[in-house]
Image (tube, rainbow, N blue to C red; front, side):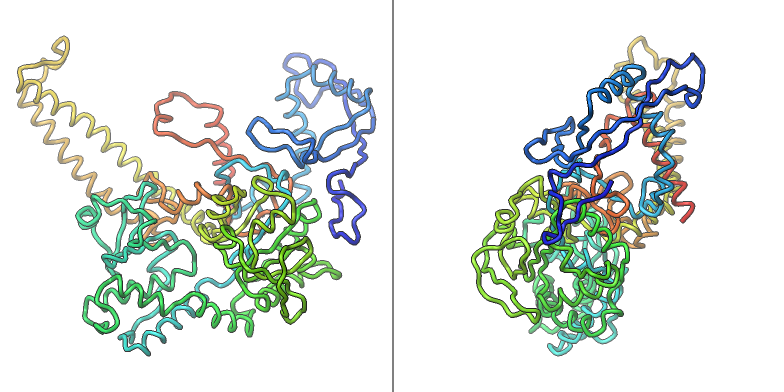
Length: 619
């Protein structure tokens, strides 16, 4: 049905009280003879009229998954139609009815261009759910801008930031000749150990799994020696979490200068320790200063840095016309925000629209994360060239500088679960919005597309690795049991009913020797394969989301903890519509593997896996 217009000056529908007249065909179905195919059922159809109306805030309830039903459609039907529907419902099970409707209307998805489950039929463009989210119940969506609504050439952005840092250090007398920006050296999700000059990758528990001193990779034995008793606590100033793409240039430069410091290439007047060296690099790449220089370059030459996404403006337009308030909350200043949004959005909007028409409120220079935790000075931008005047509160339709999330909540009249904030920074955008205001959150993770492709390419490698480790596990189980036989015999004990009596001690030792050699050979195959795991994403660090073969990375733990949903780009919402119900998948537990036989969830997972495999093969 038609969505209501959202512009206040043109609106003729209320966002919570519009009614849609709809012709509905309901069918009284005769019982199907046993064995007869569903498609041959005879139907006696009755034409009737009903109305569909959105559930407003007053009428909203909580569904079985704990989500608000606000934004759902309710069916208001004539009594005759109601009796018909109830009669049909009793003639078949709910599951049968669902199957029939999918058989009858399922082709509409293909005809509407919504191929498969994923945007453009590609799993790399999926939206992934950590915590169940009824998107249609969200009344207000706030968007970050840089790396969220505006997509940049990340490597070029970081290379320019690196160049600014190099020049600053050169002026301070640091030996930077010969250094080159190498984006493969680090990635988002790593952690700098400022005390030891290392960059590490940790699992979800905080244990270090891979590490590099300067630019030199550390062996597992060295890692165990240095970090065997260390748990990473990001609250400690010792650790710096690389949680955005902007930190890549800083980490690359730091790693390279650790090598120079070890070689005596950094003056004592500049840095005596790895910790002081980190401070030196951080000052050379002060974010506000480097961003100011970078952004001036981008304003002068946006086509060089900005990657246009024609699906992005229609995505936001769908959300707005579906009745959601859209807010832009960015740390960028007004001039840069206006220039970038005009460049990226206006060309893809209807002729009469500009980017400002999409948003019910725009806040620039928001100073996140403080924006989410405290009230700050507030100014209203009153002219197109950015002239501002102080004010005390925000109102819908306004353009502001500064302020706070609390002011926004008061102005739009919503808070908590009714609000979704979308951004690319796990801390500045996502965790503080979740912790301080209980907003629902979406993380934009641009690397996710390459991660999913790499996981698909490396799938056979991982399967082979798991097969080898399973074989070693079985050999190890037998090896341990035979060792126990020897221990018990040494202590004049035996197994119940003397079941071990048939084994002679010499025979046991011979078998143990063979098992030991076999496990050592397996280790020789497994060790390099573990190092190679994830090389399709990053040759040094492996996958973004994983740490080791079977565990999640520290970054992935942060994502699951603070981001309700995550995806690679905002335009992925276009496929999922403003009315999507995102359901989190079943979480696997260590003891799930002990449950014998396939389950309903297993079969669903297999269906999803089959679709995923087919989609990846077509890419």
